Image (cartoon, rainbow, N blue to C red; front, side, top):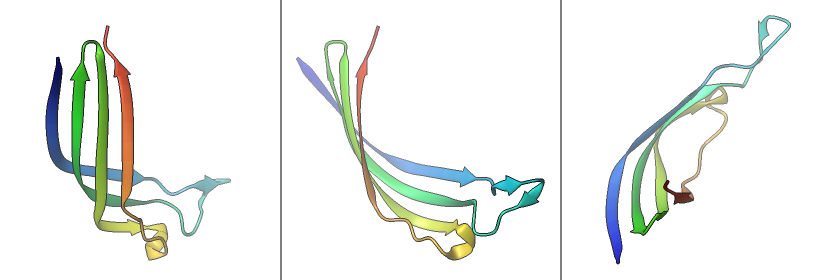
Length: 79
């Protein structure tokens, strides 16, 4: 028997600036906030999950990078 668990939430990512010889590199680092919606399916000891993430707010590489929406998938074996 399969069980389904829909979910939604937010995902925040933060990256520090790269450094070289103690100096910060330009156009690196930043943060992004994503709205997330997904579905987890449980079957026995297995879980299959899929999700869609839409950027809501971001400041990456000093404003030069614009993130795109993304899909993720996972397969988990529980023991």
